[in-house]
Amino acid sequence: MRQGRLSELGCGRARKQTRREVFLAEMDAVVPWERFEQLILPSYPVAGRGRRPYPLRAMLKIHFMQQWFGLSDPAMEEALWETPLLRRFAGLDVDFEGVPDETTILKFRHLLEKHALGKALFDEMTALLAERGLLLRQGTIVDATLIAAPPSTKNRTKSRDPEMKQTRKGNQWYFGMKAHIGADAVSGCVHSAEMTSANVHDSVVTATLLHGEEEIAFGDSAYASKERSLDADRDEGDVVWATPFKRAKGNELTEEQRRMGLSGFPCVAGHNGQQGVPLCHDAKNLPYRMSFSISFWRAALPVPPSSRAVCSIR
Image (cartoon, rainbow, N blue to C red; front, side):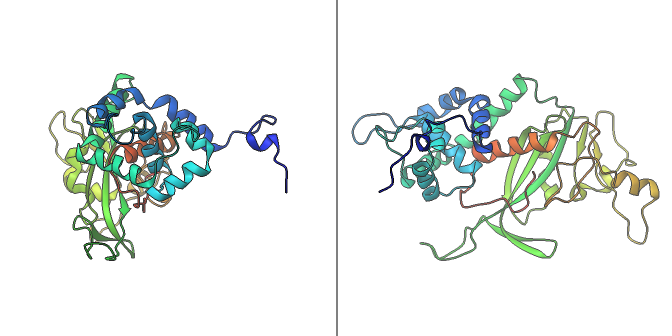
């Protein structure tokens, strides 16, 4: 029988921090857990008859990790048992509290959905970003991302979710929903979000993604139109749209239009690694900041854990 070593228990010499450790340490520091708990506390079960509920902070952190790492309920339960790092982040002690099972994790998500707490968490985070001056509000980036849903009818109702629809992107078909995102053009922090079926065009919900104080809005070719072109007539105070030039039928783009539309500036709004709408010279760090904000948004809003990003905004 092999004898265990102290290094296996973490008692050995210092080791390198993994990317997951660094990420969870950053999230533990920046996410306003206390403010979130105050929103959920009135709806959270209290100790009394029956099994004592797990601490609210632990369940909230488990819900966030489930979305950050794309884990289903059973996978999240197994990850908590297998990975001490995840237990430490959630503040769980296996010897005293154990680990929430998949049913408990499912019921907590349903609790957030029942009381519309996902939207409340998102609004609270947006308010915090504004308080800290991270939302400068001069410009907004708008884009949409597809989120897949299981197309199978092998379930209790023998049917698909009626809110899920199919759409085609390029030569590939997707089934699920679409997340429409509005993000600050400077910080990359998400300030608005709207969920629709996958077959709703990107430009349909544009008005709900703008907060009304921006001077300029950025979008890809899905948001381009004659009314939003740089040559269109607009009143004073109207938003100026920056979208790629679209070739009119029977015409070709000018050299200036080609140069401006393919300038190679860093872009956040591209899908699957493709180049999207050019932003500005100071956009070098936008993709990372926006990917964090998207990660938070996915944890805040009630997105099914079985869903995965098909066309990631990152």
